[in-house]
Amino acid sequence: MQERVLILGGGVIGLATAFELSRRNYNVTVLEKTTCGGQASGAAAGMLAPFSEIGEDPDDFFRLCLDSLRLYNKWQADVKKSSQMDFEYTESGSLHAVYHDADVLALETRQSWQREWGAEAELISGERLWKMEPSLAKDVKAAMYYPGESHVFAPDYVKALEAACRINGVEIIEQLEQVKILDWKSSITVQSKDGQKFIGDRLIVCSGAWSGELENTFGIRIPVYPIRGQICAYEIPVERVKHIVYTSQGYLVPKANGTLVNGASEDIAGFKTDVTEKGIARLTNWNKHVFPFLEKETPFHTWAGLRPATQDGFPLIGKLEGAQHVVFATGHYRNGILLSPITAVAVADLLDEKPFYQPLQSCKPERF
Image 1 (cartoon, rainbow, N blue to C red):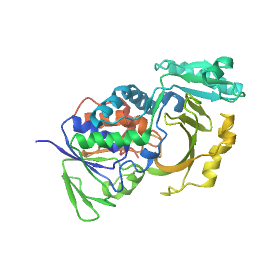
Image 2 (image 1 turned 120 degrees about the horizontal axis):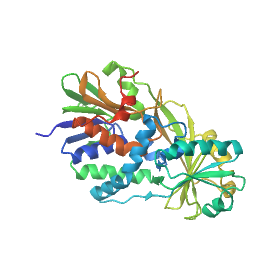
Image 3 (image 1 turned 180 degrees about the horizontal axis):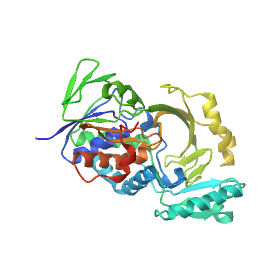
Image 4 (image 1 turned 135 degrees about the vertical axis):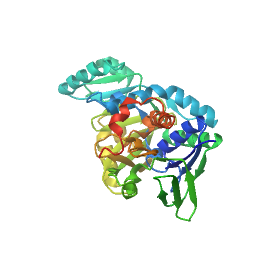
């Protein structure tokens, strides 16, 4: 008899986990309070860039991100095949641009340790840099080039994950408004606002920024907080920008549909997802120093999403101590798209009682 798994949350982590479990013959139900991918997942820029984003040290979080990047090529192909849908997956490479000599030295230090982890990292400057990215500002001193980094078009990726889940037999129930866990110690019973009850053998918490609401239920601290990320996009000719471009102020990502995504302005605003003039101005005030042509351009689209940040920066992934049938997979902050394959595989391996994946040691849900 198939084990019944209830997943709280239909964001990219919940859907990716449901997809992987459906491939391992679990009976899966996803319970979503609003619509699938309606928060951080659908609002993301879709970068798959652990070397660019993590420059400090190779900790367990970096290992999670790197392992997930290495899974992505096959993972995205599997999602496309199962969903019978296409979405953009572009192995564009990235450029981490800096403007001062001191920052070039910092890039060289980063390069030295990242190469030990398999990074194809090359420091580019001068005419070669502008040949690679002709519209880049001339006062850029140098850039670290990571040819192995890539990006997806997040809204379509999430839609494809949802479709793959449904085709594989996953039951997805949306617009539940609120869900309450009635029992989790001996068995799993969840009730929605309209009184529907859902029974399962396992429970997986993928509630994102709302995970903290479950502190009283489980009797542990769950310091996951919503961080509003505001993003804007420009219409530009395809190929005008060729790579993901990072600076200390943010990032710009060219999409195949002729848009340039610029993010992200972050602030603490509770659960508000409105776009503010100040938040977008923070982006438009600096992006012209990366690509001068943007000074004459106006964003055609602005939006915001809530990113689930944790107190220590590590996601919560693992079985709940004392309740092995409850698994957490939440708190991925701004890396949910990148971490979706490795999280799905790690959670499924936990349910299958496979050997422990070592980077999860730093992600224990009761560590606080």
